Amino acid sequence: MHQAVITGTGVYTPEHVITNAELVAAFNAYADLFNAENAEAIAAGEIEAKPHSSVEFILKASGIEQRYVMDKEGVLDPTRMYPRLRQRSDDEPGIMAEIALDACHKALAQAGRKGEEIDLVICAASNMERAYPAVAIEIQKLLGAGGFAFDMNVACSSATFGIQAAADMIRTGSVRRALVVNPEITSGHLEWRDRDCHFIFGDVATATLIERREDAPHGFLIRSTRCATEFSNNIRNNNGFLRRTRPDGVADRRDMQFMQEGRKVFKEVMPMVAQHILGHLADAEVKPADLHRLWLHQANKTMNDFVGKKVLGRDPEPGEQPNILQDYANTSSAGSIIAFSKYSDDFKPGEIGLICSFGAGYSVGSVVLEKI
Image (cartoon, rainbow, N blue to C red; front, side):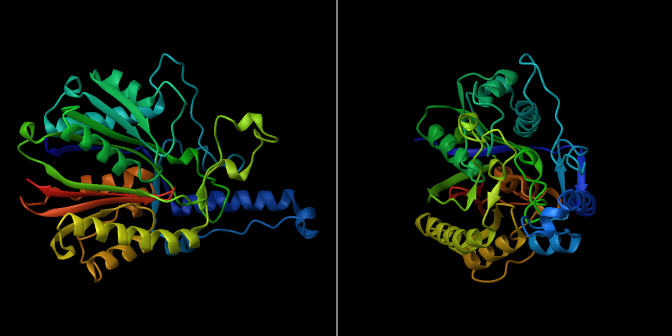
């Protein structure tokens, strides 16, 4: 049985930034247009007026200050309120593969590897831009990698589920080196016209390189992984390939974008995540006091503070539970990997950390790492 080691990570960050102030200005302009166009129906009580958003509301609700996006103009257009991305020919790299490739090259460079040395690519993300061919196979081709590739979707937990799948295949000898890639263009599934969630998401791509330990004298040993799921409709998106077969399926419907019951999610997911981590640590024979750092899913600062306190039994010290959501917003599966990539260079051999992601499904995945 082989051991699996993370030897490199890469992060692609889009060039466009939307601050909370810019987002609020666009949303409020949209709300004013909506209310003016529907004044009679609002006055008759047939529909509700759109309330304004505010910078203070966003910061208090999430801790998010800005987000990176693939397109800024379309999102901030009050008459549009979603990204404007150009149509690509089938002979061009898809946009998800393109940003994934950037993250992959950075992860490979960190480890001193080349694309042709990879024999497994997993594209693990909360959305895929098409049904087939698999985005992972396109990335495999662009890298010049061998072996095989496949797509995986476990929403915000996709990265940790992908790491477990890759690590298991490395342990059993099926593959030697794997890239788990998370291209998250979440601006495409966000309902920017909904005050309750219009600030949540941002775009990014991450990549994690995993190798056999005998090929990797340095890195982070994957000591243990654990994944769990429990069905819930409280985070849902009804968009899919059967959309046109149903009445009003192609209409501009709210349920065709990201939806969540935020309070229910917090009440149900937070205990699930804390118990999952504590159970995983116990079975891996790691005491919470021995954790040097938690790299958590980057959805909401209050959520992370809750999980950190439950796991450690106290408020985390600065640096024990780093957040990147203030800059990146919620980048779905990529968030915990961004945190790991940016806040792991200071680890000394023997120090232990834990990556955890959680979200729709419900789903939760955790990875116990030891610096070697």
